[in-house]
Length: 497
Image: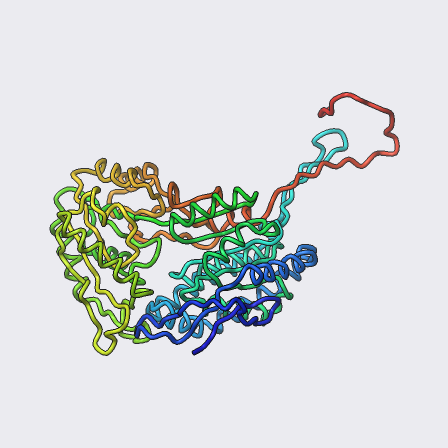
């Protein structure tokens, strides 16, 4: 069985703690590898390497700092297929979806390549007699990234390229469920020419996370995952005086108004709810049907759901792969059962779905629940799987209130032909990312990703301009160069005269 270790100082490091976690192939249920779970000493070694590298890396000129980023971008582009196969092998998502994940991560590498534009600073001259004021941004030091299983390549790429471009050094702790893609990203960074210690990866579980959050040499922590863990990481980071951006869970709603094209809405509901087996924080998990369109919309969604091809991610005919673990499959299926017990109509039940020849794989068919109400478990909790709930609303106002009452505020969408209604929705809805006839409104790289309410803990969203601000801190420099004719003593308060 293959053993997966760490990568520190541009070298692979064998795990030494004696603790391991299984790494499964979700399509077969077999365990081809195990990953070493870092001890506190192993985490400390990664942080020490990053701390030592920071001294020279922060002083590296921008042109030399971005040179390996350009090479890294070319390496990732050339190895898209390799990375996608690693993702599929351990996460289970279909190959096309994995390729899309790599492409979205590449956007942030390209953003990082242009970091000189984002670090220009500001200058005001002659703010007082002979006085100039400049605002600059400088790196923080060692920063850590803790990333989830559902996007094992994209989310790390949302973090470390920008952090490193800003002059920081980085310790990555990927998910122990599917660590190989993230580890390969770090190996390729060394190949691209990043100096030793600038980017390190340490695999582990909660013990590694806790040590990174508490470590006195870690200046900031970036996290993407569930809401309870995001909240805990924020509290721990603040307690230890660290900057933190912690992106949590979601319950994303798609509001369908009576004038919408129902075929387009149904297509997009299918794509957004069941893509990547629903294991993404931007998945649409609730469709709010406004007015009398509910029956017609549900019929269209059910018809399309029945035609989906579910199978191994490596099969080019598959449109949806398995879930990440057997335990998660059972948890997701339980929401269909509880929905039925609590009064929802189970229009499509995928809980007994099997793939011939892959009976031990972690497959689950898609499910569609209609007439869901806010008191049901399937509505109140984040399912993170291929279960779509339909809620009926009598009016736009009722639908908006339903969305705004949610404790999450990650992403949302409205489907309509009415520009006025769309404009009103984008201003009134309480969510960080809004789509108008776009079901998954993930921003492009030069904008920032993040939600509101229980979907975000910390002040800054991830990547884009917020990412640059998060990974740097401001400094204001006031300068006066004395004129040879100036002189004398003045104990008065400085003024602009």
